[in-house]
Length: 371
Image (cartoon, rainbow, N blue to C red; front, top):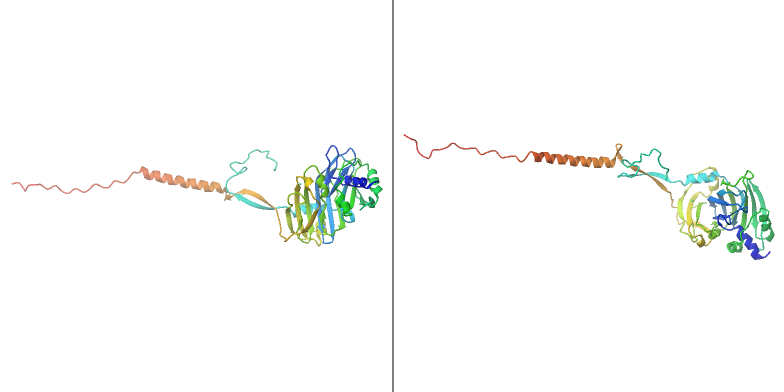
């Protein structure tokens, strides 16, 4: 088997999302999902946690899938040999609660839709409005519903045999995407997914997969997503000793920090994973043009551990003694104006006051007394 053929197999296995009806594969931010031939699968949601303690990296990923595939494989490149185990689903519930927005009340003076007199009297209401020579299988294990194979580029026949034994149809494309991983001697984790009940399609949230491997610096693989034909998005929880940020935007808009803060003894699965790395940074990024993705996300410590917390405002109409403030203010002003007008009208209706008539003196005859 030629080197080109080997690369073709690897590239195909690690390919990004193909079209839904023609080549049904979905590429996650850090790997690929490939169903059996003639079946289809989609990933409705991908949640990932990256933990970095300065020498070792852990990634916990949970996928929510749909479609009619009864079996599928998920592939992820890693910089060094990884150990794999099942993750705790409760981890993601704890993270969701940890970063949930705080609620604050914001008052407004003038009435809006929903406020009297513009309230909606419809009783039904309305609904409230993310330079290897080949491939070798170096380890296999069973984890719950998953068969996990850890692969290296050493034996050209092993990967082909592994794929054929699972009846995967590989599209003939994606011949250059894997070259940077091959050049850097990365390894791969291949996970075979099957439902607990035979014949039942894969559907809903799958058990999380927890990978641990050595790393010189924290990295989240994204390079393969550049081959996607539809916009991609990334949501990533990062646990470290300090607030973290990406070194570059790798071809998309700058990642947005959704949350940053030190965890306060969370306990449970999150507390176990965050031990020694208590600072949580949550990043969100969209890629409207995936072909511009230039590499993997490398992370570094931010300049300061400035906290970030989303705020959800509950808008309320300002009231005085239970009465809308605008009614009191406007009504009081109108009453005052009416009173002033009435006073002016009353005063005008009385007319101006007339002065009293002058007093008259007794008449004096012009002639003297008569005889």
